[in-house]
Every structure is written in C-alpha cells, then in structure tokens.
Length: 370
Ligand code: RIB
Ligand code: CA
Image (cartoon, rainbow, N blue to C red; front, top):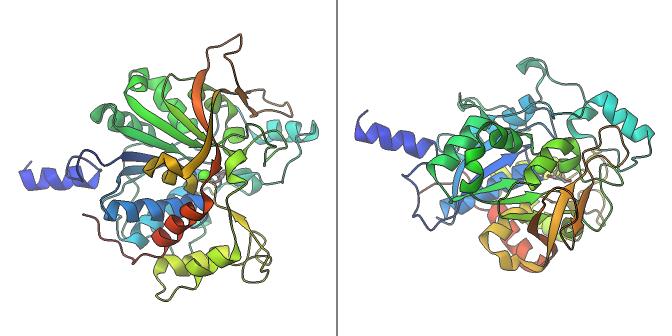
C-alpha cells in the first residue's frame, strides 16, 4: 500500500495520523440516538476533536435506547451531518443482552420493579430490515456506511493497537465491552480507563425503582465489566439527576444567532419532550436529563466533578427479580467476589459544565477535523 493510502486508512479508523499523543484517545460505546444524550455526546466529541482536544477512535453501537439497527442508522447520519463520516467509523455491536429478554422483564415488573416505564428498545418492535427504520428529521445517511468490522473486533483491535491509551466512554448497556473482554481477556490490562454513565448508587433507579437503565438493560454484562481490574469512573444517576437541562440553556442551543444542522435537529427532537407535547417549546418549567454528556466533560477535566467518592461497585444480576440490574457501592470490600474500587461522581460544577455543553453544541457544522 502506498504511504499516502496507508495514512488515509489509518486516519479513517482513528489511527496514528491524528493529533499529538497527549490528546486523550476515546472509544465511544453507545446506545446511540440522534440528538438525545448519546447523539449530543457524539457532536461534542467531534467538536473537541476539531479543536485538537480529543481523538475519537470510533463509535461502537449497542442496543439500549433503541434496537441496534436503528442506533447504527442514527449514528451514521450523525457523523455524516457533522461532516466526519470518513474519519469517525461506526461499528455495529450486540443486538441482545446476554440474559434479559421481554418475558424476564415482564416478570421483574410483575415482581414490583416499578420505575418510569422507559424500556428503551423493548418499548417498541424490533426493526427487521432497513425498511422498518425511522429517519432522523433531516433524513438517513446517504454516503456513510457502517464499518465491516464488528464493534467487538473494533474494541479489541483499538485497545491492542494503543496499549494503556484508550479511554472507553461506556454510555450504553455493557454488552459490547463484556464480549470484547470475554473473547480477548488480554485487552483488560491494556485499557487505560472506563468512564461509565450507569448505575444508581445511593439514589433510586430510573427504568426500575432499583436500577438505572444502562446497567438494567444487560445486568450480566454490567456485572462482568465492573468487576474487571480496570481503572473505572462511574457517572451515575446520583449526579446526572442533579444536572438538568433547563429552558434558558435549551434556548441558547435551539435558538442560536447562527443555526446549524445540529441546532436545528436539537430543537426538533428536544423541543417537545418525549411525548411530543410537553417540552421546552411548550412548557417553560420543563427540564431534561442529559446523562451521558457528563462523561465527556469528566474525561476532559475531572475537576468538572466537584464531589467524588471511592466505592467498591457491583451490579446485581438476578434475572426475573425486581432488583435485577441494581448497582451497589460498598464503602469497604465485601465478602464474595473481588470488586473494584472506583471513582463515583456525586456532584458536578453545573455552571461550568453547561458553558462547555452549549459551546460545543452550537459550533459551526460541518466540523473540520485536523
Ligand atoms: O439512564 C440513563 C442512560 O440510559 C443514558 O445513557 C441514556 O442514554 C440511556 O441509555
Ligand atoms: Ca446512552
């Protein structure tokens, strides 16, 4: 292969043709959506890469908020909208959790799991072909294709090629990461850190009254991954429940002086709430969670977290029980399996964070990567 072609290939998969070595290398493992928290994080990460502050190695998609096929379609459109479809690859991962299907979920709900009723992908039919997919407000991707390598192979290859350099932002269910570690355990000591949005340590869950959505969706995978000897940071509901998007901040993004393709879609998909009626455009008191986006701020600067605790974190894997997927943060190592002591984020510098959030979501599009 000619040197120029090799450089282009390396660049296309986030290889050595990117920014300097000191720039954090990040792999985004996500239950992607168009412009809710995962999609917003995708925009923010691309803009940070354009500023030379981050190197995005790629996006591995997993079922969670949506079924895999829809998540991949939305991720492809997202990178194409941003103008980075040839630089930030999208990889398809796991479609199903290890041991959490609809009959099991129904048993958990009947056992009193409770929660806000949000079941993500399980809330709707699984798309069986591309004909079943819903376009983003500005349509489907037309030029950008999913990578031929699987998400699991992408994770394994990327970690091996960049030993002790890769931060995984784990902002969806942990099935892809668990599969990568199961199949290639030699990558475990080579992962620099994992920063999760997941868990509810000292607060109630959301999808059930016991469990947070990401770790509830695939409790077995979550348990496997949090027990791995990897430096880990948890951004749980404890903190994300206290960092809510309000109308004043929404308006800065949805109604900016210079609208972009991102701000337009942001307004279309966040302006009217999850029910299409009660949202920022209709209710000045409306607020919205922006869970995953906090993980990226923490990666940039851990000082965005104003309070953290060191805990031994575990996830209960009890299929069919009401508390399946519940996270626990022990102050001391308990008896039983060896747990990892990890950083649990409890409070954030909200004002500073929202300045970053607004800035990155309102920058010109397409972005131009260095
Ligand atoms: O519980 C919040 C998490 O569930 C976020 O990652 C959100 O995107 C959904 O996946
Ligand atoms: Ca997510």
